Amino acid sequence: MNVTRIPSTPGDSAEALSQLMTLHSHPPALPADADLTPVLPHTGGVPGTWVTAGRTTVERGVTIYLHGGGFEYKNPHLEQLMAHRLSQATGRPVLAVDYRLAPAHRYPAALDDAVAVYRSLLGQGVPASRIILAGESAGGTLVLSALLVLKRAGDPLPEAALAVSPQTDLTLSSPSIDANDGQDVVNRAVLDHVRTQYLAGERPDRAPQSPLHGDLRGLPPLLLAVGSKEVMLDDARRFAEAVSAAGGDVRLDVYEGMPHAFHATVLLPSPPPVATTLLRRIAEWAYRGARSPDRASLDQDGKDM
Image (cartoon, rainbow, N blue to C red; front, side, top):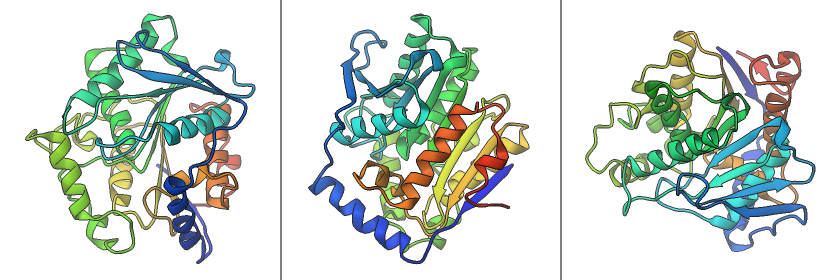
């Protein structure tokens, strides 16, 4: 397993938190080069928006983006902005999926929507080998869950998958949930609420709802990113270890000193260094080919463990 620690200065975490506070009160405007195209009903009946940035090209492939929000919340403007950043980073059009939310639509509604969108692109002639699945937080969980559903059903799997700060074990048994308590913007009570709202009585120790408990053999190349202060740090780490043990290609980036939602700093008009590093590493991972990246370039920010 390739694990890279991305260093930070003592003030980076405080700066990230401070800047994150401005996102909801003063959301940045979409850049002038953002092109938004609604897609319903062409994605299995699931609403969403194609978001492109600048010189993106479909020949390079497409990215399906699943937003975070604890399976319960959404912010369409910020999600479109995140899709725009991902489009810039990957050089691909990004489909931002407006999946159904709990508690009105509990498990497996959101997962069903993610799978339906992926299958709809296959049905429209987009090769699986040119699709990247990407998501953050709850969206990252859905990405990993969708891979298990698709694999079990015999569908062709995507080129690769990106999950930032995913929750992979809904039993809430990761040691970092308690070890990082008080250092993160999320705690055990929040995770318990998310689990209750999402699962609606389904067992948390089963896959695909808890991806860690699934058969992880044969998954496409994975890039996982997580902050070292996150209560879900070990959710990402344990999943990466399990995929590696199953013979998979997985890369785990640990951003030192960063809390949950640190990735949202990429939305700021003047993003801090942690944000530009995250986007650059995603860009290199996508551009150089998830199956055979230039590790010397990828690892120049940090130190392999």
